[in-house]
Image (cartoon, rainbow, N blue to C red):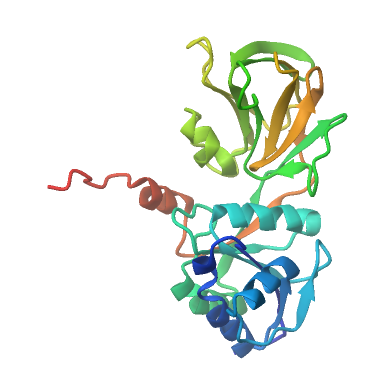
Length: 296
């Protein structure tokens, strides 16, 4: 089957045992194709401790010390986002194997993985380039990665009153948000947190960001869409004197008065898609567009 040896790096969910149920089948499929398989150390020890790994692997790696032709993310979209933060600017395509529920990013079902690998060797797949947001904030330590594939959220702390967020685009004042927070989303993240707070669905490849307030004090604060070439500057005021900056769900505490600068990252995340999978078909399936849900 194989014409050359491909290298795969596997990341997985380390919190729910059921999401690693197919790990041996995944590794077996890769080994049968003649591939080299490495696995993230945290996921490896999770599997070993639970007695769930029966197949031999070639290498265990730590942190970002890995090389591969493809990355396999086993879990849901959260696991995919963590894998993407580890891939960073390596430009390695990511295959999302959906062991979760919704799976916008992780859209390959475990039962389809064998056919997916066959597609890799035949070259019958597509690679989608996805925009990433880079965050700069003096005094805030974004451990692991200062970039986000989905979104960056500025949020009040749990016991705080609403925040005041002064927003500027390319140095020009946009507005002042009084709200529980603000979500700045890429097209990839437009079906995630942004959608849940009323943001628009944005088709990947449209080169825009969206800004959507979380529970705004004024109903006139509607979402706005801007070019992804824009430089967004945010200055936050809050009574608790601290607020949260969440990058794809990874939260860091920042001090009041900190200036947050957001811009397009100098690299993109590559997502592997089977030719049968399109963005619009995913929307129809996940959002159940056109489905009769009345139960009649």
